[in-house]
Image (cartoon, rainbow, N blue to C red):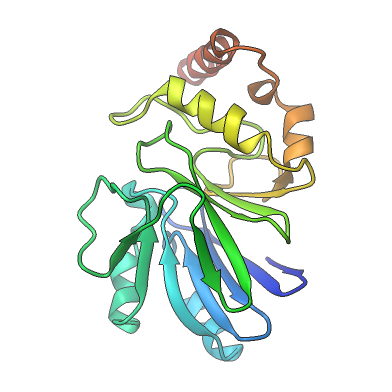
Length: 223
């Protein structure tokens, strides 16, 4: 699926370990491109890169869970000079090509600009990628269509997730379009406004309410 929003284009690819999304984004004027989460087989992505004469410069990781970096080495093989960008304290060893980015640090992509938002909770090295002008947000496993990510594994923290979602993501403009890391909802993407109105995960007035919603969700998965 491809979205065209002024100067930046977004194409999503579905596959990987568990309905993962990988995104190819590029500046329509300069043709500079980036991958967000190399989580699916790379052949169809390379076809799009070559057919559009794109220049792949960067790979941005929303976090380092294995399914989101599953095909990272394949991209590095094809593009040995590519920059790998993510949280400044990744929980997986990423090598010399890796560059950590601070909270609210800007990443250039041709004539457009991306902003990093640190969103620990689902995983301690989670970040989201926001384009303020185009109003789109790549959320990895922090926010899906209809719910948040889970906090049941090591290096996850429900208190941190609540802060990340309610203080950092839900405060963004409501017409921001969310591009999640997995296809777990009824659509591939959703606005922040619709996520708020449709899901009790995003209607909580306190951390305790959020914990109750999360607990109920986990019980329903085991039922």
